[in-house]
Amino acid sequence: MKLFLDTANVDHVREIAALGILDGVTTNPSLVLKEGKDFKETVLAMCELVKEVSAQVTATDVEGMKTQALEYAGWHKHVVVKVPMTTEGLKTVRFLSGKQIKTNVTLVFSVPQAILAAKAGATMISPFVGRIDDTGGDGMLLIADILEAWRHYDFDTQVLVASVRKPEHVTRAATMGAHICTIPFAVFQHLSQHPLTDAGLKKFLDDWEKTKQS
Ligand code: G3P
Image (cartoon, rainbow, N blue to C red; front, side, top):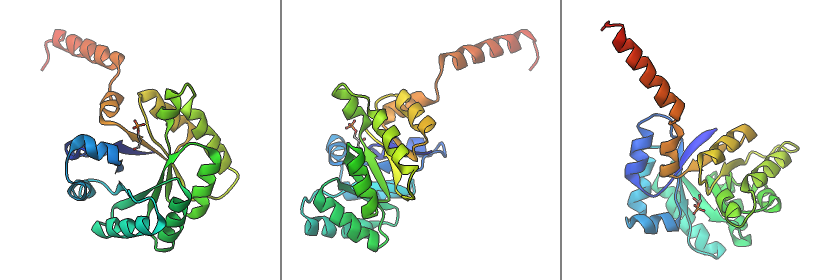
């Protein structure tokens, strides 16, 4: 499973990328607003750190989306154009697919949406699991359903688990066989930790001390 960071914070990408385990980054307008930095500079800096950086179009009509998408794709070869799951977005994805430009269809909340995006030629789709959880559902069941549908066909489209809120989402994404999981920085920091690891290491070090060996 590819691991992405869900952020517009370049320092956070640099920190996780330094571990050598980061495959990509997803940004969106809300994350860009939160950081308050120039969008193009942010995307370009991230493209130097990882191989796939999703940059979201903000136009809502197909011509506007195409124009923005072509501009973003020209910034750097690591840019993945993020397009919303609308009919205009699907037309844009089909157009970009014909030009071998990578796309990420965002705001996917159903299996039919996932299928339409795949048939339009999306490189990846982003079902938002946390936002489904927020409404009382279980977002990971949508991932399970999409992956089940994928088993019957030969879609190349990668399923990217988005709107992750907790390590359990990452666990379930991996056990289901999702292709990618995009993870907020705060959640990513928890992934390497376990209280039994800490307790076990403390015991080992204490016992080593008692051996009086160096
Ligand atoms: O990048 C899109 C997605 O991950 C958004 O997450 O937490 O705003 O629902 P969230």
